[in-house]
Amino acid sequence: MNKAPAASIYVTVLCFVVGCSSKPSPVVPSQARVVLKSVQDPIRELCTDDTFHRTDYFTRPLVRFVGSAIELNGAPSSAEELLGWAQKKYKRSAEPTLWVQVSPESMPVAESALLPLVQSLPQLQLRQVDRGFTCIKRKGK
Image 1 (cartoon, rainbow, N blue to C red):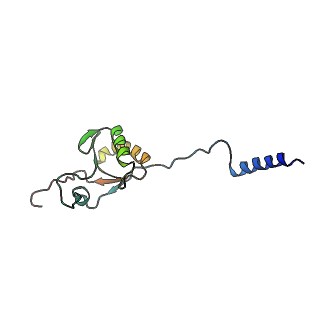
Image 2 (spheres, rainbow, N blue to C red):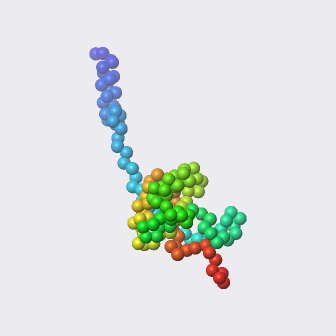
Image 3 (cartoon, rainbow, N blue to C red):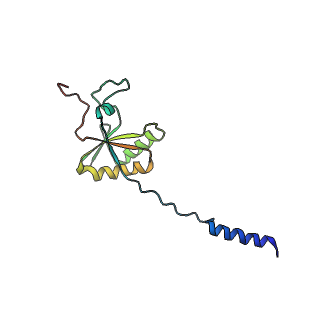
């Protein structure tokens, strides 16, 4: 018996058993979800500069969802602009964190806008800030 055809049949059977087909197996992507982690100390996280001094403004990136509107760092934005900005900012970021303010009625809009971020930037952490929180110091504090 010729060894070449026998070896070919053996390799074909082996590939079939192990799964060496010419067609790649379909990759099932993991189900990405929008998960907002709560902020324990928003003044420290959002209202403190690099020298640990208190500010009257947000020192970290903040996206706010108000009704169907999106604001990114205080300016009107869209879901597409938010995604483009996040991909550019967090592509090589050592601290990929975005702070989010959202009301319960705006949650569907927020999830729709944030899901593409989570899918394209799996390392991105989303931190939920109380929707009424501001860095402006109140008198007497």
